[in-house]
Length: 515
Image (cartoon, rainbow, N blue to C red; front, side, top):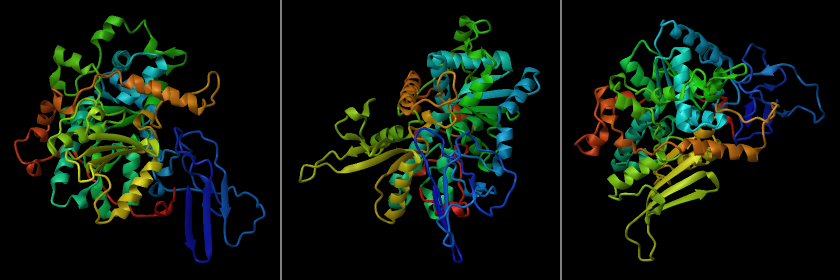
């Protein structure tokens, strides 16, 4: 991280070495600087070594000076949500979204003092399944059974159905923008369920550039909306692979959709009571109980035996481990806009090209024109990008900023802040060497990440628009799925409860940061 600022004749430069965007949290942003104001602030979120810091001013000699013990603090308004540290403004969040608070809620739930509903992401379940050497489905069933039988959870649900809603809404939103009279002004559509990226965009882009952000809520937010729609008094706890989801839950646009967000590692700590590993407790969890006691349906009206069994099986969108936005919308656009029906493996279609750009976290999906030009080449009529990690995000955002009124390089971009996407979120369970607290080497970590991805892919693929419960979910909020509305796409109405708004944040120190 680098920052420069001019104050009269002084020029101050900060440089933090060891900046790492690969599989590990960023260094702490608590830097020791001369004459910085002292105060009481929170400690770093992750116990990382203090970064080496170089401080230079125009009036300073090159000789080493005595290190100041005063601490400069970066306020929340300067934060890029890189999950490297927390600030004083986030201490309330860390208190209210904590394991201790969850224990208090579970205690009240076991006494029937409140109705506890827990939603889980598939990425979190895959991480726990890898740690405990369980299949994805068995791990999900053990989590649900443990939360109900030992901690008083009234219902335990998957966010898979909510993810399908998010994908359907995003696809129609893109189609409407593409068919609009001014696609150059409204495209590319930037889609992300990542609070880190949304926070970054709100703080880095001008007001007129925020229009590129998709308004569709994240699966966590949609699940919370549906839960509170039917049970307003419920206490909703969501388990997510990312600590930044705690920030998302506190956004005013979300209201009270989510009461507590726990990361995967926090839930694992909660389940690990001393030497007891609750998820492997064969005495309190019987195999027969696991068969019957899986996930509850997202909507309570669906409480039939057949519905419960179906919801007990996790479903994948088939488009990767971060929600599958890019692949689903690409498939939808090819079918609805260009009349091209793509197979399950879209790369097998002769008009589709999928290519890796610069690194594995930057991919392009291209649909070629049916008719070659005079040179025998086919024009690229649809071009999508999937970009993970802040390094790729920076490149994408620079291209958008420089495009101006020219045709956009991409029509659609799926973006997540974490390298490798949500499966590698900062809240996932860290891999450590046996009998030590030392992190394992990078190669082994990548191998572990691949095994978690294999667990994730054990879920059967279900196309979002074919979800049998989609119509009932929309009916619960007085809406009709956009894809089922018998009107022109420009006249179709998106379901307002599943959409949100954004706000421009006043530019401060963050505006001068160069990555």
